[in-house]
Length: 236
Image (cartoon, rainbow, N blue to C red; front, side, top):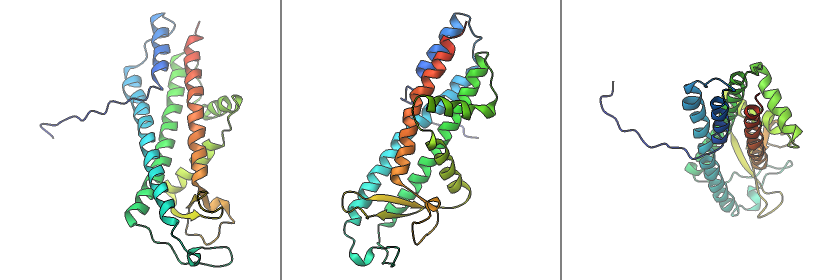
């Protein structure tokens, strides 16, 4: 066992959960609900806040890496362009850049999926605590309907699950740069196998699609927050 150690300050700054705790505390003070278990705030709440704080760092690293990749790719020549009709020569990038980008894309999918699962768990716990228990298997459907009722497409939920599950259980990422639209309009092609053509969209997705997943999540966060606050404010 360690006999001495130094704790590193990991104080998180994402405020998403704080208004929810305020609503819970107010309900407890007015005796509309029983005190919530301390581990819900100290463990589940902190875990959500920590992962929410991690996401911007991962996204920033991906954006920096992709900018570097696009800039480097501008030096490609016609012989390094692949089409459905002909194969070109592969374009070499610095290995560290390539694999850091692999790691960060994989990490983003994992962390985003993880925080979604934690938020769903919080949703279930707070419904139970407020006296309006729901089946755990129904949480995802309730959140999906909440998002759609507010005019936000919920496709990102399924896309995130599919991509994360594939890279967790079935394969590793490869990538190429889509130069079809010319300089300044590049997109990253994240492949689920080392494919030769892109006629089967189930075998790849794009950075633009990852951005849509992230934006879907960011747009859904305040809706879920407001819903949980109103859950407690509406207690008799």
